[in-house]
Length: 389
Image 1: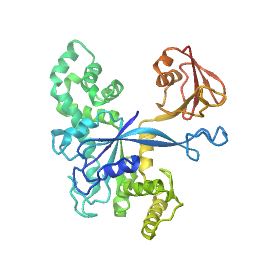
Image 2: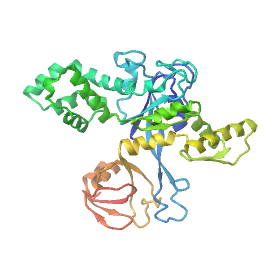
Image 3: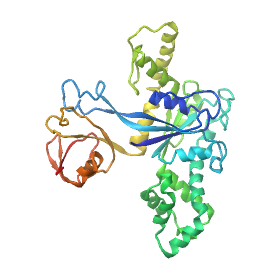
Image 4: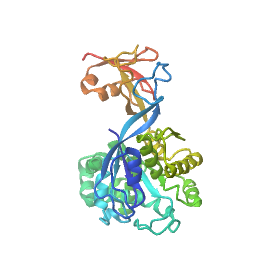
């Protein structure tokens, strides 16, 4: 399952975001280092279900009002403080937990109510712009530390035995860095690796961070933040999404209790139960926030991390291309996240390695056209795989 890390300084609201996105039972408190060990939970990207375009009466049974939710893993890691790569705070635990994450959502306290180490200082008393770059720096310096430790030895191998990309990948494979990441980052450097000084190695490490851990900023606590804070963050040359993790928790819990009808990412909700006076007042306050911002931002962050940063698409494998179902008649039974550029054989391997090995051809369930193994898949494709198995 695709993994996304939630990172940021202590008390920025990572665990609130995490609970809002997963409804997992985690501790939330107004003091630093509430999260000690990483929390793992299942969240989802939200997409339009193909059953709508296919005109399937009654839907497919796998979506809600034409909305399909596809599972991803969220990792809520320990809070990060400046110089975490040197072991300050819980830095080592943070960086280890982040290894498997393909992208990072930087949960930032847009309200300016916590200082650089996550201590409460009151709303508006800290500039959240100070926190924007430090996370990128810490992850890059973590990669730098791994490389710098054995760099001279690595370069001796480079000079005599192996190519630079192979050597660097072998050193960093456990950090979630791919060979493709290494090659792309090397292409941005102007000199041979064996000629680099520490400054050049640090620059290369930051390039690797950008390639292997792309980042989106969740400007959390937008419901509390001074307007100028949110506007300054949105003006940055980065992907920034205003977020209220607390509002998302409230809406999802109210939906679970049958008080409202709400789907994550919706711009509004419907009251269907009997909230008391205090609950109704709270819901109306959240409704005003949704009207202003369009959503709580939590679902948008997850979707943009998966589809914008990582460039994934959703593909739906079926066994019966006429009924769009599996062999038991379940319509559109599965939805797979695939990297854009994946082909029909790649999908076959995702379904099962034996099916990939014995792949014959694929069928586009919409057009009934036969597809070869190199056919590039498109977002929303419904595909039948034909194999000898």
